[in-house]
Length: 152
Image (tube, rainbow, N blue to C red; front, side):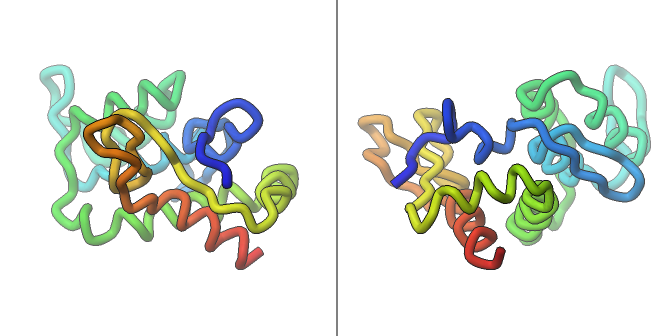
């Protein structure tokens, strides 16, 4: 079992650098891409309205995946987000693992269970290990990674 997407297994993290191109914009990580896909319609940012295309471009230029994630907490989510977020993430991960070296690294995990363990209560994408959550969670990121590994 791999239960931490850090250190040797950091390449499994959405923060790991990779190129995801979508609609002519190149995102430097799956996290950048994922946050950008939350946008549909104009956004109000720094006192200005910006188009969704300009907002996505702005997200692609953020210097780190952590900054992209933080930016994602400030934007107006598209109305269908809860319906489409799993398919958005799956598409981004499929694109990520088209890179031959990342694909080989994913395959090197064999048939180990992949769990995105965290301590920040993300029980949708991972499994929170804090004493309150007690390793509960849907682990959707881990499940998608294992599905992609199987499909490869």
